[in-house]
Amino acid sequence: MIARPSEDPWAFSPPEERPLTSSGSIIIHVSVEFERYWAEGARAFVVKGSALEESQHPEVKALYERIQERMENGKRIVLFRREALQRVKKAGFDILSDYGLGQGIGLSPKEPPMIAREDRSVLKAGMCLSLFLGVRNKEMGATAMGETIYLSRTGPEVLTR
View 1 (cartoon, one colour):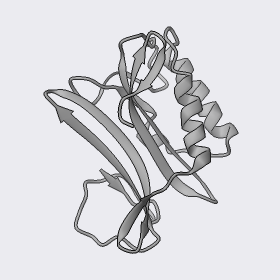
View 2 (spheres, helix red, strand yellow):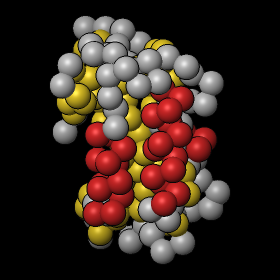
View 3 (spheres, rainbow, N blue to C red):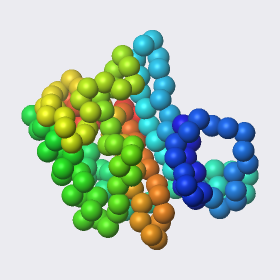
View 4 (cartoon, rainbow, N blue to C red):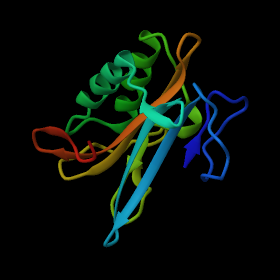
């Protein structure tokens, strides 16, 4: 899926044959299946002439890493989500709530648990999840990043970096 946050209104949609505007931004969300197992990731890019350059916002990357570190065995999803949203707000961003914060991932690209308000599941070692962070503010605009994460006994391990 691709989003063009420099256009208003915008949303993720399938790629289409349309030129990218110079100095515009795009977010690409990819889900990949191999032998029935899924992985997904998201990255933001800026159009520079005829090339794409990954848009690494250091403050968003640091925020993502702080949120990811809090994926702890035994923690309820509802608490993890609440903490993540508090961190986003404290960092001065608005969350792109339409896209959620992620979900379980395995034999299908969307499996329980859902990192959503109503999910009272518990994070457990052996889970594979996607963690998606889509944020915006007035200075930066909208950006996103996401990874597929395996929750081991010692904590989260990124599989898609």
